[in-house]
Image (spheres, one colour):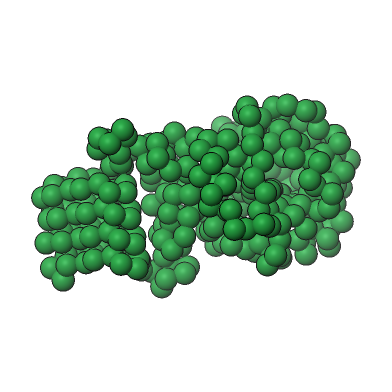
Length: 312
């Protein structure tokens, strides 16, 4: 099996952090986001990364990983088009992963389920309380998917199961898709014969980490899953004994917290420094400095050497 990792977006909702770091390489606790996305892949699974924005940084990141191939996407192609664009490399069953989805999905178990059902495509499905904000599927008792409804009006949803952005596919289905920009939901799934499209249900956690709030939510899930709730303190980070470290906090390698600083639901990036004050729901980017400030619901990063803030 191979994997296709979709990493072509610009990460505009996470600016100014993504002015200097592509979203897939933003740190989440002990590793870049992209490494959490692929954590459940079988060992040795080759990965094809479709990328565009800051592609050279991604190439450098994977330079010593011959099992990772970076393919440039010269124009936006959509989820389906990005996979169709690398069809020549997909000569066996493959899994498609969105580069900013952090979840507890067990991909080997999903592959076993796919083989058991015998279809051509299996989609990961996740239950949510309010499916009206997502693409929702209609399921038969045998978990065949019979329809998709995009952002249904509240109360009209055919189920509470949303498309979780992970797909297991057989390579021949790509012959049904057009070249160029396209989507699976519009240009592939309706063309599949009945019985070739199934849903794989999982629980645990699922977060689209593409916004500041969801980035912090993904961090919280990973702290609970991997680090007994945290906080996470990276190697070389410096924490003053007078500091108060609350819930959902990550102080990444080389960061410094001094004085009577209070942190709640915050990520302090490598090289950043906080002295005094209080931060709640804050992402403080690399090499940024704060002193005696009380701030909340903001991303602070650098653009052209100047510190820049975006609220959320």
